[in-house]
Amino acid sequence: MLVAGSGCTASATGSTGRTTPLGDVKPAALSGALTAAATTTQIADFVSSVGGDRLTVVSLLAANQDPHEFEPKPEDVQRLNSAAIVFKNGVGLERHFAKVLDNLPETTPIVDTSRGVRLRQQEGEDDPHIWHDPRNAEVMVMNIRDALQRRDPANAAYYAGNTTRYLAQLDELDARIRQLIDAVPPSQRKLVTNHDAFGYFTDAYPITSVESVIPNGNTTAEPKPGDTEDLIRKIRAQHVCAIFTESSVNPKLEQQLAADAGVKVNSNLCGDTLGPQGSDGDSYLKMEESNALRMAAGMVEQC
Image (cartoon, rainbow, N blue to C red; front, side, top):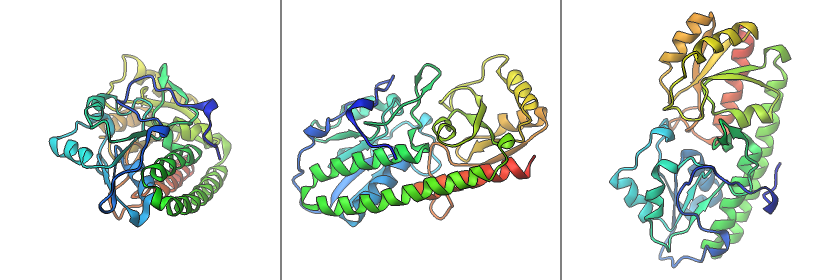
């Protein structure tokens, strides 16, 4: 697993609003449980895992809500304003509502959980989908632990213990995913998705990322002229068996492309968001393993 360090700090291409350096996170004046806000569902899950019953955690995004299309409502701003600490993804993911974060009280720490993550490039920008590598998730969780310990020093040991247990679960997750992918014949480990959200995943595991239907990390983008025809040629030439889309994205375009290419569509991955409560993607650990299971099954069964 990667360890956060000063030599590999994240430097997002796009601003994500104000960020509080770890050294500037001061103890909160508490009258009860600490309230922490998270900008995404994955980060809310990380914060809950570290904070346990010593925190009240609110997520700005809901399950199956696309962060690329999210626009904060007044009640969302109110929830952020009521938090004692805010955790964000960083790496440009929150750029379209950066002003909301900038307008929070200066006394509210805003922690960039991507600090220390090794970033990959995507269309000339830093790829914000860092959570799809469990090794990056480890760095994010440690950033959350460090900030909570400074904001709530009375519970520092409790947060440290929860973090140690969760890091062990991330190690186990990494091993299970690797085992699932290794069981797929190498010639069939090819991934086509609806948008470019799984680059960290395919970098971490022995999978060839052929291309995405939308060659961009933003689900609101549109394919350029000729992109679709080029992807169909690649699918046929590389004998790709299926296109995988996300539960939070309308698969209409992918279904048409798959029909033209003569392959099937699996509309069952969790990419930018966790799944609803009770689903097999309602936590980070379950989401990543479920994605790996579905990828492995689609790569084998549909070839």
